[in-house]
Amino acid sequence: MSCWNPCTATPTRACTAAGPTARCSTRTRPSPSLFGFADSAQVLAANAFDLHADPRRRHKLLDAIARSGFLAGEEVAFRRRDGTTFWGRVSSTIVRGPDGEIISYDGAIADITAQRQLEEQLRQSQRLESVGQLAGGIAHDFNNVLTAIVGYAELIRSDVGAQSPAHGHAGGVLRAAERAAALTRQLLAYSRRQVLSPQVLELGGVVEQLGEMLRRLIGEHIRLRIDTDARGSWALVDRSQIEQVIVNLVVNARDAMPDGGELVITVACAGDDHATGVHDGPHVALVVADTGVGMDEAVRARAFDPFFTTKDRGKGTGLGLSTVYGIVRQSGGDVFLDSRPGQGTTVTVCLPRVAPGAAPEAAAPARIAAHATATILVAEDEPMVRELTADCLARAGFTVLSAADGEAALELAAAHAGPLDLLLTDVVMPRLGGRELAARLRAARPDLRVLFISGYTDDARDLREAAGPGGDFLHKPFSPEELVARVRALLGAGVGGTA
Image (cartoon, rainbow, N blue to C red):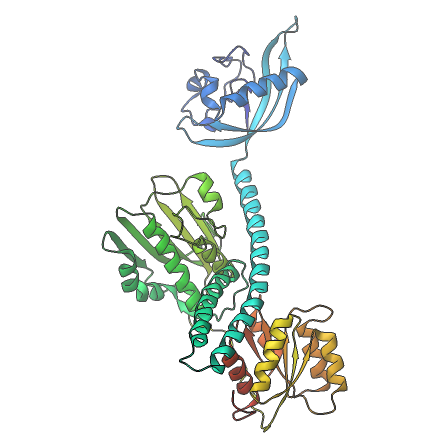
């Protein structure tokens, strides 16, 4: 904190209050460091307008203090001598002479730049979290629709001959559905509801193995350099997802250098001294830096928003950086972006560092049933998905009981006199969800196998644990073949008929 004059915005305790070229009095020696001056003489000679990032703000400050006699906690953007800016919190009072004229101001300014940055990071995080929740909800609902589209298209194709026009039309529907499913996967990655299969990986090796493919991807007009840590940089991540992070960042860098440039990918251990300046604590830093066109402040603020892109229409979905953000955050890490117009872009991905070989515990092997036939209870609140699932399982030779939610499934199970071999249930349903339904049914039927299905999940591994030995999780959208194959794997080879 430093004393200052709100009229000149220079560090001092008493200053004359004349017009735009007001100078500080010399009754106290001002501290020059706040504004980057070498000594007090330079401060005294400074023009007030040059010290305000927005000179119009100075006029408003003068008007406000003239009306009320004081300022309290005003946040003002100032400019240092070298041209950089900082935020100051201003408090000041008027000093009047015997005739009532303003002769000086007495006050102080506190540098709150770091606080403002933290507040902005919090607002950005909250905004991205809200958008992520919306994106996850949309993707979940859309995956229910896609499950029905894919399923019925597959049934049509299996019911008609390969020479029939309907067979080709169904194939077109399936190709379109796959493109839509790819978009929903990106939305789920952004909203951190993607299904991950983490393993302990040395990230430097992962990047080096991608090196040749990345060089082909960026073209010969861009120089690629890969620097890795000889000590090894180990993190617990999903290999396919972290590879997608790397590729997305490289594609963005390539597009920012249409006339060529240099791309540097660095992987290193960091944060042992808890003072890296980007991310505290031991972590692995994956840094992708380019010499491209860079981003202005408005673009940087929206860079991680889904569907935001500065590319021409048809040349990008705007999901590249948003997907990176979601994958990294779901993996327990952080992502930081630094960019200026004409100065390139640096994206730093920080992931928790782990010890080599600290792999997650393997899931318990599924038990195999010896039934020759099987009865399956289906609980799904989306009618299209419920009807399709029941139809596919019945075609495969299983006996199917279907319910619209968990409560209805409990009632069906209680009324069913025969055995129940498998519960196939959505996770989120009205009245009673899939987790609670599975727990209640297994309390009475310990041998019941469980297959959870969902358009998204925050923790697929947790769902597999909830499913118990012999249980599993199937992500929507799925095809009839995937569904029947997964059910047969849970119940045992040769169960039911043929699909």
